[in-house]
Image (cartoon, rainbow over all chains, first blue to last red; front, side, top):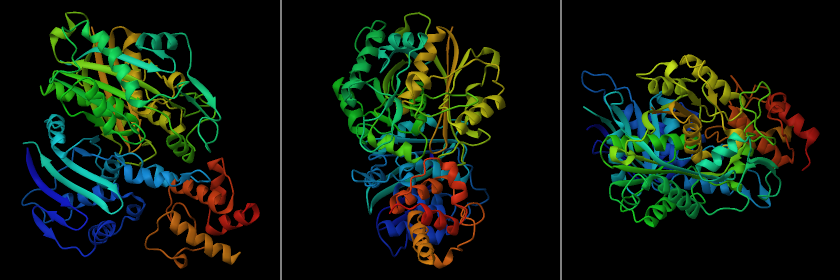
Length: 182
Length: 326
Length: 85
């Protein structure tokens, strides 16, 4: 398995292929800053929950925002395989706030994000990936490795994989990679 | 090869795969109108357990039931083996916690491996079986205990109602005046093994192929061209022809767009003449359990032959598997 | 009516997370769906919820929304005629 690109996003820092990307904001505002710098023309970003914003931005940096790879085109992504520990709990909590007794107005815009795999769907729509999208809930990023290894075949050979976690407001962590099975 | 060596369904229609198959054969439905189950929600039609169930004990009961069938073919209880992996398919888990119940189930059976939870919206139950097949094919484990479970809550019902997606009457999938959808509760377990010895030379269902594809179109509306579902069907049809397929278990929620999309995908894949089955009018949409419940009913009603199970879900994801028993 | 229109624009911006928009950016008579604000089906459901929460209007048939959600003006007119709070 070969790592083509690697990204780590914390609430205060961004590391792409081991190099720091300077940022001014922290927490949820950091993701908005990255959106404005690297995307800017996709207002649906603002409808996304934090988990989706995080995965969306990480995928964008992995796939688009860097120097073109020498003598080669950007690879076609065959699969998006992400995992975390807390599923969609941050957004689930936000949705719960719209159905309190005595103030019951369930929000469809929040309910749609009460599934962790929605982030993989957001990435697939934006990058037009019609391959596999899968989401796993695991105890640690290590546990995703055998799953990814058994998913990638000669047919599915390039994948966006990794850890994409958001447990509460202003608290998230992504460690994702673009990998290739050679 | 990956063999299905045991299974179980526990639903409002009955306890155990056989009881559920008989209920379906007898035309019994778990769907009822519920007016006071949860505060604030509008009346909704769903298949719910009479007494509210607890997630972990319910799953444990289903695994024990499936193991009863499997251990008659194996020398010892496989739940505790390091060669066995537990895989849980669920969308909302035990009150929105997905991993803790999976860990509790694995611990109950003395299994030493960290469990895997598959949460891929309505397709989770089919995706979890695909994950099992991959891990067993790769030789990482010998047995996989795949559990699908979701229990209905005020959270889920209110959300689907905010989507205007729930029908107050029993669903009528693929009908000219179709209605849908209805939610449901169930737990189902399928035990898979890559050990030839586990089937002791009896005819057994083999999980031959599985495929997952995204429409890359919309989060909550299916693709008009059935792109993802079509690709899944094409993948699982590799090496066989439409004449080899005895039955396709469709998703069939009864919503306008889902049933349209499935029809388009099936026709594009050249499978329009294959018999189809749809089980939502009996069980409702059991979410994380649906892929496993509907696979087991498909296998048991066919007895032998070749069966395809397909599902689609939020996030634009589609999945299909093909099983054969000769 | 003008006051209701302004208030409604602010509520739409908030409910639909139009981050970079102010009420002045929304044309009162422009279509909300399609080429106008470009709203989608989930936005339509969110607007149905907004009418319930802010104005006590329950719309059970989403198809009825089509005529109401033509523009901010048609929406305001419907609210004025049907509001219960």
